[in-house]
Length: 576
Image 1 (tube, rainbow, N blue to C red):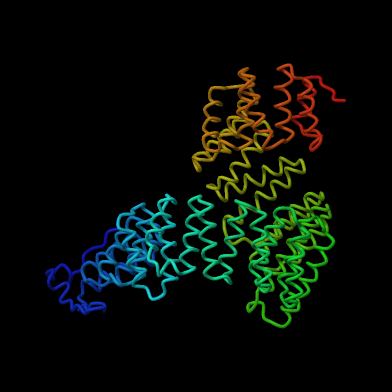
Image 2 (cartoon, helix red, strand yellow):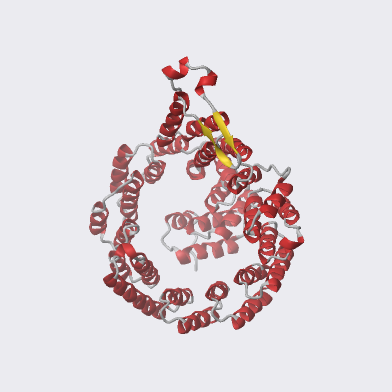
C-alpha cells in the first residue's frame, strides 16, 4: 500500500527532516523529532495495527537507518518475525546489531536468523566472543545451542557448537556438556550424546538434566543400562519426581506396567497431597487394561477436583480442565467396554469451555451409534458455534451420522445446505462428493472433487477418490492413472492410495504390480475392501488358497462389507 507524502515532508529538505542526531556512548541516540519522522512512525504503527507487518517492519527499519536508533531496528525485527518474513527479519537483525553491538538480544537474534538461513561464516568466533563476555556462561552455552539448533545440517551445528565451547573454563561447566549432548543427539551421534551427558553428570552428580539425558538417549543404545542408570540416580535422589515419572513412562511404553505402577505408587506414598499422581496412576492402569482400577482412581481424582472448585474460583485454578481430562479418560474406558450410555453421560458432565463443543459432538456420534438419530440431531443443533470451522464440523458430523444410519438422502441434504453457507470449505465438498458417488451421481461427484482440488491443489484424497472411482467403474483408465500417480506422489505410503493403484493395475491386467501394491496396502491397512481386492488378484492369478485366507481376514472384522460380499458373490466363492 502506498501512502502520500505529508505536506510538511514535501517542503522540508533532507537536512531539515532529521534535524539533529546526538550520539551517546552506550545509550540510544537523541533525535530531534521532525514532522517527517513523526509521520513515518505513525504510518508504521498504523500498518502494524492493521496487521500489515511487512510494511510496518520496513518502515521502522528505514527509520532505524535514518535515526541510528536501535530500538526502531528491534521493532522492525519483531514485526518481521511476526510476519514470518525471514529475509526482512535478517536485514533488521543486522541493522540492530550494527546499532547495538553489545546488546545480547540483538546478537542472538542475528545469529539465530543466520543459522536458520544456513549462514555459518563467522558464527564460531561470534559465539565465542558472546560467551566470553557473558557473566552467566552456563546460560550463554544454552543460548549457543539454541542458535546452532536452527541450522538444517545438525552435524555442522555440532561442529560449530563444539568449537564455540572450547574454552577450558566453559568446558568445566555441566551446562556446556549438556548442550553438546543435545547437539550430538540431534546430529544422530548417540555415543557422543551419551558421553557428553556422562561428563555433565561427573561434574554435577546431582544433575537431573544429565540423568534425564542418560535415560532418554541411552534407551536407543542400551535400554538395560539406561534403566539401570535412572534407577541408580533415583536410589540416591528418591525425591527426584521428574526422573521417576520419566522412568515410569518409559517402562510403560515398553509394556512393563507393573514396573511403572510401582514407581508411581511410591511417589504417591512420598507425596500423598500430589493428586496429579492419581491421574497418572489411572492412565497406567488404563494402558495395562485394568479398567476397574483406572475408573476408581479417576473418580477419586474427579472428587478432589470438585472439592477444589468448591473452595477456589474456577478462574483461579485448573480444576475444571483437570476434571475434564479425567472424564475424557473415563469416556475412553467406557467406549472400550462398549458402554456407550456411560460414555455419553460422562461427556455431558464436561463443562470446560475449551472442551464443551468437542464433548457434545462426541456425544452426538455415540447417540448415533446407539440408533438415537433424532437425539443426535438435537444435540448437534443445540450447539452454538463461534467460527466457520465449528459450523462445518456440525454439518459434517450430522451428515456422517445420517450416512452411517443408511440415510444418505438426509446426509446429502445437510451438506448441500452447508455447502451453500460455507462455499469454500473443501471438507464439506469432499464429503458431499463421496455421498454423490454412493448415490451413483458420478457427474456431481466429479464436479465436487475437481472443486476440492481447485481449493486444495495438494489434496491427495481428492485425486485418489477421483482416480479410484474411474478405475472401479473401469472407464477412462488413462485419466485415472494420471490422478493416482499425482496422489501417490503426494502420499506414497497412504494405504488407501496404494489400494487404488493396485486396483488400477488389476484393471490393466498387470497382475504382479497389482499384487505388489495391494500387499503393501494390506500390511498397513488390512481392511475388508483391501482384502476384497487383494483376494481377487490372488484368485485370478491362481493362488486360490491364499485368496481365501485373505478374504477370511476381511470377513472376520467386517462380515457385511459390501465390496467384499459382492466380490465373493461375483466370483461364486463360498468360504467354508
